[in-house]
Image 1 (spheres, helix red, strand yellow):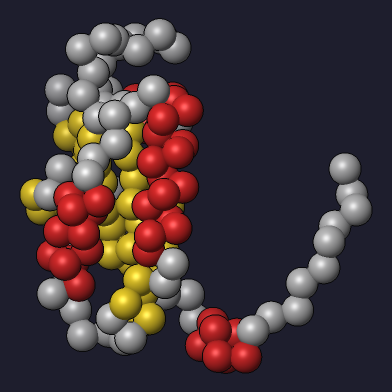
Image 2 (image 1 turned 45 degrees about the vertical axis):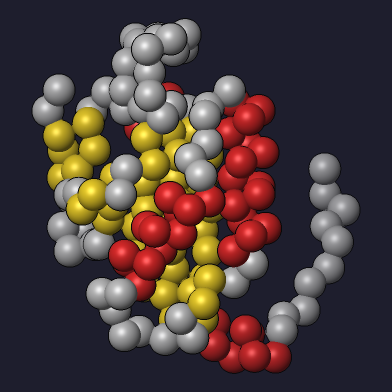
Length: 143
């Protein structure tokens, strides 16, 4: 299957299954059907915020979907690889786990193998103050 580069983001550091990558196979079920889970994590002063909790939630989501989750060590290696190439004090690591390639239609192929994706993204501007002082929130009553 052909790989498609991410339009407008050719310089985003990305790993697929731990290897540098610039594209995703077009038959990836995460792309075609949203068949996967993801976590978006702030990295502040070189440390991912709530790392263990994010990995735990990712594993739970993968289990609900019946997708085999990689080890925490695999995700930690991805983080180490992406963080070693930046001196930015604040950035985002996005972890994605898809069912992988295979199967046309909603029924996945039993031969599909999960695909682990990690991206390094710039942190949104203006969140330094909020991170330091907190933010005001409220319960929404809209159903």
